[in-house]
Image 1 (cartoon, rainbow, N blue to C red):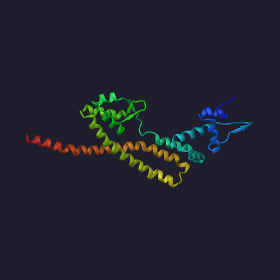
Image 2 (cartoon, helix red, strand yellow):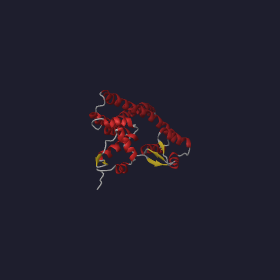
Image 3 (cartoon, helix red, strand yellow):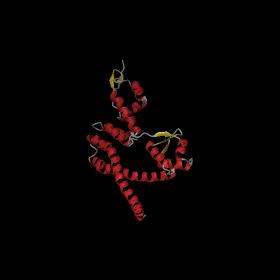
Image 4 (spheres, rainbow, N blue to C red):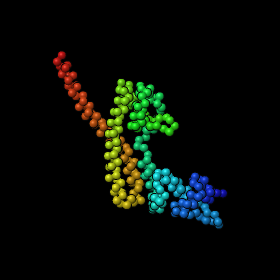
Amino acid sequence: METPSEMTIDKLARESGMTVRNIRAHQSRGLLPPPEVRGRTGYYGLAHLRRIELILELQREGFNLKLIKRLVDGAGGVGDEVLRFTRALRRPFGAERPRQTDPDELSRRWGTADPALLGRAVELGVVRERGDGTLEESPRIAHVTAELSALGIPAEVALEAGAELKASSERVSEAFVELFLEQVWEPFERAGRPPGRWPEVRDAIERLRPLAAESLLAFFELAMTDAAARAFDPLLDRMRSEAEET
């Protein structure tokens, strides 16, 4: 009885979702090892199926077949390591999942149906348009805008404050990416990308996630304390002076 560990080319095509023609083409390019031939029939195993899955996923990540061949030919499972590294890069920083919304809900929350406001929110990335006509937004940003609205701060003013925060966050993000490139990736490149060091480089990306968020929050708290002191200390001094005069 035929099992996934012992497949004809037709079975392999069904299991992988690839056509028989493409499987043969990958074999001719050296991307796929030849099958074990018994009698006049070639049999493929799980290693062939996993190789096809790797090729397909690397293609989805934008790698062409020539580069994929170089990766899968590398020693030490380089193709798999590159794929894991690519997944780590593609994974969003943070665990927050966007929530679905629509223009009517946003209008009620913002207190205005001005389409220019929605356009500005989309431009800033606060709200994203989906292909089905709905919208999605960050629950945390939605909470902040709702709280600011409750304080009497108009949505358009809150959005422009958000634009400044976004610009500052982009500069911080670029600083951390530059740090990774200079201190981790470039030495790895100069060493010829040794297969055994791929996990180390991928681990650096994973460790960068919480470090970036923690350091940004820590420096923000320091900056906010200083900014509040600069802004409010003169007001408090004036209030004390007025109290002493009465």
